[in-house]
Amino acid sequence: MAAVEHWPAPTVAAAVRLADGTVVRHGPTAQPFALASITKVLTALTALIAAEEGTIALDDVVTEAGATVADLLAHAGGLAPDGDNQLADVGTRRIYSNRGIEMVADHVAARSGLTFADYLTEAFLSPLGATATVLTGSPAHAAHSSVDDLVVVVDALLRGRLIAPETLAAMTTPHRPELAGVLPGFGRQDPNLWGLGVEIRGAKHPHWTSPTNSGSTWGHFGQTGTFLWHDPEVETTAIVLTDLDFGDWALQPWPALSTALLGAVDPTTASAEPFDRG
Image 1 (cartoon, helix red, strand yellow):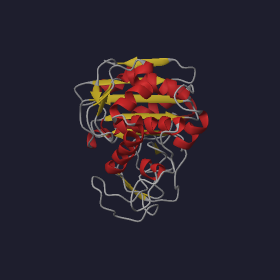
Image 2: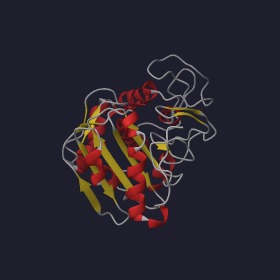
Image 3: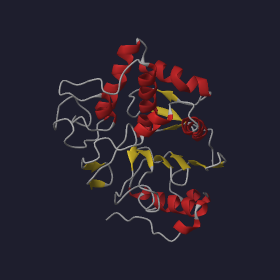
């Protein structure tokens, strides 16, 4: 993990959660960072809790074109990235849409009578004591949090304290797995697998995780130079937050770090090479 000290980001905080719940930390893990699109993971968790509580249902139709909550969480609603215009029929293309995530949050707020930020806080942030985590704007990209808080959230998620195991399975299983689309920063992927609010690695290339991550790895990265992934095959989670926007600087170091971390967990994976841009 000390490799992050050679990254160009002014500040990097990181943690790895191992299968037995042990957490290894590096850097200022209590410091809040802008999460950018890792916010979508927190929003999806809130929506899934709302579904379990009966506030909403995953098959509620949210858009005039017929997209459900599940479709929007999985970027399968056909919506434009940042607007209400319909670019494709529902369930025909994977179009990464901030607006779709915001519409899910609006749906939760309308059904609950609470602001979405309040629902999120009451659903799990306050019960977990995740006091460094706050939603300051769009539920698609405007949360701030610390590595320590995200470790607490992931630990609670994996231990069944946030949602039921079957709900976690739905979250991390590809929704409409046949869909192709563009993965921001990494080009067209066919198929472009997504679960409910989390990206699923599958066989994507190039990718921000390691080639040694299993295809069932799920998580998200953010434009502010942040990433979170969980690999269920080795029951390992990596969380890295930085204050340098995602760019070419991350294309090799991110997969290389993940390769090294996985090699430490399972030495049989250590020989794989990190992805290149092509």
